[in-house]
Length: 113
Length: 114
Image (tube, rainbow over the protein chains, first blue to last red):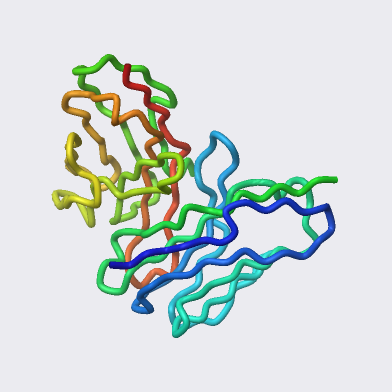
């Protein structure tokens, strides 16, 4: 059974720091991996989608990498800002079951001025 | 382009009452699904659909019912509400395989069962 883990559960950093959020999954047979952002009391906003054949995706200050063989993905945030404060979730679409997502429990990020 | 629209945003129910959470998407997506989010447990799949007329159970389907009569709509019915169904419910949609795009989520429905 596919399981997704995110470490750390919470992170507090000063503004301007570069930081890395981790996501690991137990079964490498995935179709894609998606990173989301969730603000308190709000829905999920898609940040980056990495297909299983890709190694990384970039959007602005965000870079997500995927190492399928080791079951890991990282989300790199450059020059963090207080507006980046949110919970970050990763989710995998299992190969052969792409009609569903399996989520990690998220990393709650706080960036203070 | 509205994306995925969920109504209502908030709801309080008494134990035993029934209700329907509405979900509509205007992106012509084939895949739609319902998740619930509970503290410390992440998002868990309730029911999903790969197209009009096709639905299936997810990880936590008990106490919920769905149907998909059109591509656009995917309502979630609570048959007899229980306090354990207090949660935040999210609807999501995706174009499906081969489109290179992931899931889009609605803004959620916060349900309290008393």
